[in-house]
Image 1 (cartoon, rainbow over the protein chains, first blue to last red):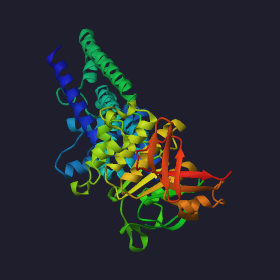
Image 2 (tube, one colour):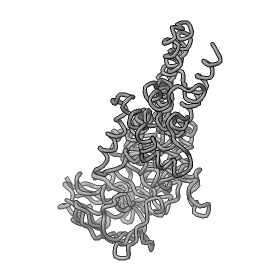
Image 3 (cartoon, each protein chain N blue to C red):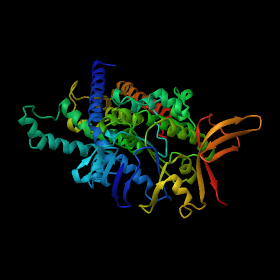
Image 4 (cartoon, rainbow over the protein chains, first blue to last red):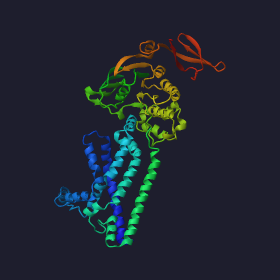
Length: 227
Length: 272
């Protein structure tokens, strides 16, 4: 593998890690709200969260490009703050990836929180645990399989992103050129051997992470019924 | 205890004794569970006033509402609700760790001993039988040294054999701990065996209330009138397979009983 290939792998891992960590932090309160709320806006928010699942990545990328561009709301904000413009930067890629992978993190968390139900929370309250205490001492441990799914899916999905990266990040070595783009470049240049080694790495990585996830979660679910 | 509560399906104004077991008795759908949950602060829609032995937990007139986790209650739900991610011991310590040391009046040891669960401490709740789970959940509620113990049909989810397994433990609680208890049940036998005071609920209203002795001798409230006698075991005769009890009016030989000599039992004589 060439230095450019390794650089692309490193950049991809960095992007996926940062994206997953931020998404878990922001996705937890969002998923908790979705699981508990009786607000009439619940379904609207759910739909917005699920939208990246079905939209072509180029559509997400296109609107993000407009939003983050010199005339977009976000672009004007970042310029006012002296941060410059986000398209074709790593930060821009992180923001785009967060949007792109949002449902893959929020939906497993939402399902996990909903599956816990009301009773453990009431039991914890009668045992003197405040709502925040209950969240950390009861909800988080019970939602562990959901978190594992969210981490693996969020990470793997970000690693596999292509269209959004191309729209937002372009193809700048060590800044925005991730593995999927690097493979595209190799194929474009008819360097099939290089493309093959990277593509195979991606294939093995995806297979192994899903396999581990299924294996761990099927062990876990047998002991996670609340009774 | 003073309970004035209004909910869509419940309208009650009750004064209950500050000690002993008060049974909330009535057919299903009478609002028994709702009443208990409102006392615990688990029914946010409940309006009114809840005063437990001098402490006001809710008073809408004064805009007081103490959240559930700040009320000194022990709550035993119909389903045991043990935390599957903790061992039996971890479950017992969950509440205990969250109360100040000065409030710890029931030791963990005592709770474990009363419910006979010492051999289960290291196990995971998922490996326990239904009866064992419910005993652990009762011990867990006791371990927070509550000022009021709320039990919502703790035996309802169990079969007859498991009920018979747990009832003696509940009787021991009653005899050995001085914690007032609200006990919801639709089973007449449990009420007769455990309660000191009975509140009869029907369609969200209190139909009648009074001491269990009065309650049982009124045949319009129970289908078969019966008399309740409180007696003390004074002798066991293993050879003839019998036990002797003493009560205010005399002594009786009865089939063998499990209690120790000196323990108090209730006898029910049915009119047939």
